[in-house]
Image 1 (cartoon, helix red, strand yellow):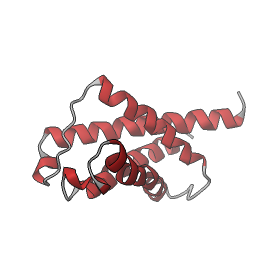
Image 2 (cartoon, rainbow, N blue to C red; image 1 turned 90 degrees about the vertical axis):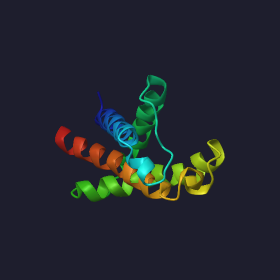
Image 3 (spheres, rainbow, N blue to C red; image 1 turned 30 degrees about the horizontal axis):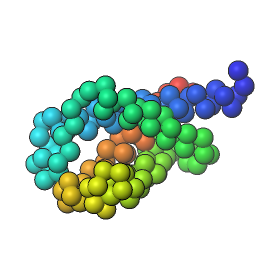
Length: 134
């Protein structure tokens, strides 16, 4: 297997793991009532149909880790790369696909903050996995 194919599979796998960790965090904080306490209506059910696309998209977003930025700064790198899916969620998915208003404000005023935090969980967990795997 070529070196580039190995890198692609590694970053895709790391992104998938990040997608799983992110999804479990979103579900858990909804389950314990944390998101509702902040006035945000994000309380997903942990089902395969909800989880599967999130893991796959996590893997696709993991391709950002092919960019050679901040390789020695794991947490910063994960956070910076998490801004890509965050911007897409806030300015494309919520307003256009889900009809929840720009930045998801129809779900609650703290929605953008939670999206940043949950996506940071994706990026940081993927970055840590990549560091451990190399």
